[in-house]
Structure formats: structure tokens, C-alpha cells
Amino acid sequence: MWPIVISSLIFVVGLVLIFSEKLNRTITSMIGAVLMVVFGLFFHFYSEEQVIGSIDFNTLGLLLGMMILVSILEPTGFFQYLAVWVGKLSKGKPVRLLLFLGGITTLVSMFLDNVTTVVLIAPVTILLCEILGINAQPFLMAEALLSDTGGVATLVGDPPNILIGSAAGFTFLDFLTHSLPIVLIVWVAALLILLFLFRKDLAQKPTDLDALMDLHPKDVLKDPKSTKKIMIVIFVMIALFLLEEFLKIEPSLVALGGASLALVWIRPSIQETLKRVQWD
Picture (tube, rainbow, N blue to C red):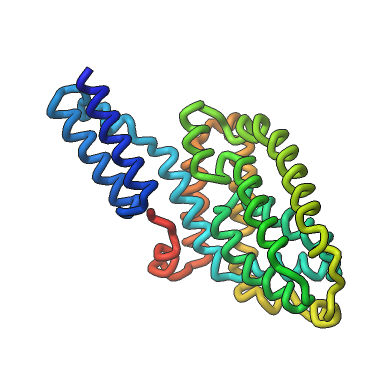
């Protein structure tokens, strides 16, 4: 009885502190983990082997590898390049721009961190809307909602996916097969709701189409060589994720291997790269 009471109490208090934001969630988690281990060992309801065994190193490795890749890609201007390219492709038509920006944000979020994707694409979205003289709110809402939707589709799209997939023993293809149909339905539904809610804003006519068409995606791409290299690494990783079941390799090995290859091949500043990793 006592093991259940003590464990539940530590867990609930930890959740309350995290939700209240009175203490940094990383600090709260660390304190909770230490207390759980200390009380567990003291009252003999946890052993040291159980403590180590409860840590999912596959999830940690997968998260670390993918975050390092994103932190290498972030300063290259790749995300901004995509936003400008999509803006020109839409030819300034608001509905088309919403579809394209939402679509590209979803696709990127399926394989890379969705928060980083939105944070980097959003400023360019605002700039595009200012050039066209239209309200940016529908496009920012679309990016926020559809990036979350896209992140649900794959094993590497969001941290909770990694935890679920690892606990259930799902391969990358298993997870994709189960989640993609639902994601497609939700994606279309979310898009239709956005089109309806912002129908007046999306009916606006752009005021300066020529300025948009004068933009060149390559101008915002700061490091084309590094971008090409890291995209090659990411495509190889996606192929390995899909072949995971046949090759019998863990997703964490693929992610850490890809991150290591990118670090060796591109040679970014290690200090700056690690600073951009979301350690909390």
C-alpha cells in the first residue's frame, strides 16, 4: 500500500508544480525522479536495476539525435527558404498561400521539431503578409494547428510519439500506418474550419503582388552547401526509419548516427549547435 501512496503523491505533486509553472519543469522532474528513487530504495519497493531499467534510452537517443539535426539545420535559412518559395508559388492568392504554408509546415513537422518549424517560418509568413497587405492571423493559426497535426503522424514528429512507439514496440512504419489516416482526416477538417473562420480575411486582394514576386528564395538561404548536406542526411535517415523492421536497427541508432554524420560532414560550431538543442 505504501509504495502506491508514496509514488502517487510524488507524481501528483510533480504534475501540480509543472502545471502551475512555479518551478522550472526540468528542475521539478529531476527532483521528483530523485525523490522517487530515494523513497523507493529506502522502503524497498524499487531496486537499482529497476531504476536503470525504467529509463528509455532508445527514446532519449532518438530525441537527442533529431534535436541536434534541427539545431544544425536552423541557421542555414532552410525554413525561411521554404516559406518564400511557397509564397511565390501561391502567386499572392490568400487561400492558396494558406494551403501551401499549412502543407509545407505539416510536412516538415512530420520529421523535425514542430515548435522550431513554426518559430522559424512564422516571421517570414508575417513578412509575406505585410508585403501583400493582408492579415497574417489566418496563416499563423494554420501553421500552429497543422504543425501539431503533422507532428502526430510519425514516430519522430513529437516527443510523445517516441515514448508511445517505444513502449508499444512500434517501428517507424507501424506508427505511420496507424496514425497517417487519422492525421489526414484531422488535417482536412482543421483546414476547412480555418477556411470558414477566416473567409473574410482570405477574400482580401493583395496590394503589392510585384514585391512578392521580386523575392528570391535563394536570397534567404544562408548556407546552401550545408543545407544540401543535411537534407541528404535526413533523406537517408527517413529511408532507414522506413526499413527499420527489415534492418533490425533501433530508431535511436539511426538518429544519433545521422546527427554524428551531419556534425562530421558539415562541421558546425559544436558550442552553438548544442546551445540550440532544447535540453529541457
